[in-house]
Image 1: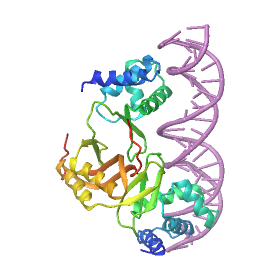
Image 2 (image 1 turned 60 degrees about the vertical axis):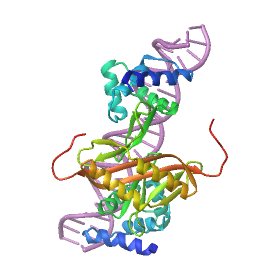
Image 3 (image 1 turned 120 degrees about the vertical axis):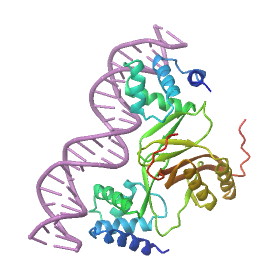
Image 4 (image 1 turned 120 degrees about the horizontal axis):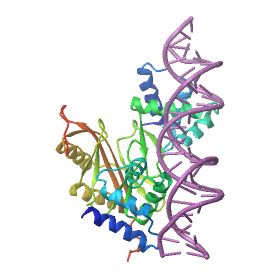
Length: 147
Length: 147
DNA sequence: CTACATGCAAAAGATTTGCTTTGCG
DNA sequence: CGCAAAGCAAATCTTTTGCATGTAG
């Protein structure tokens, strides 16, 4: 899926809910669509500000919260504690592997794990509504062994 | 493993590092060992304060950070954003299912998922060093289950 | 027009830190 | 005793909110 399609689907989503189409919301949607990584609010504000510096930090906060409620972006909270975001549409659902040596994030998906998660929730008497899976790992092939 | 054994292994861990054995650290260790759930710092301070109210909040903050560095407790960051803790020793490894309607946390373990995680990391060229898996779910039907 | 959205600054909540005092080793 | 640790309050950092103003529909 193309970037501008992601951007448009975000815009479509909030307009469908009867929410107003402001230039601030368009910029945040555009910024998210152009971000291949997982920016936090401050970083989003910086990137959005590069397009139009008049956008305020509080608007970015309000906007990501709104986009999340509308269901078009996902909120993450990796080990650093800060909230990080990525569009949920335009990309298949995936989980994250974090390279502990570099901080690089690799996305992956496993049907098998998805299935098991639903099965576990079910067995515990619940219906799965969401999940978070993060793998922390180091590159193979380094002879470093722990003694 | 018994509660007082957990408490003692925490104490042993920081004393081995040459760190001082203060009554504040003993109380926090004891409180953690007695907590079957995942208290945040404020809650830990409340529970520790029940044993001796002279302990300060900043000391609890410094102590959990220290215990985490020493490796005897685990820090979690569920969706509410606040840091929550549990002893890493004395309990088998497990993951968490969070009841989105009540905030209740159910612990579970799946060998199958553990195995798949290692396999996925391997396939991506990594060696798994840690992971985090959280399921967010709501009770099936209307009856609330207790575990 | 007018209700909803933004900007700004102030507030709030969580966590950290500077500095003085306390007490473990 | 000396230095690590605690207490307290002030500082930080992230996120939220009250209120006056702006603007999309």
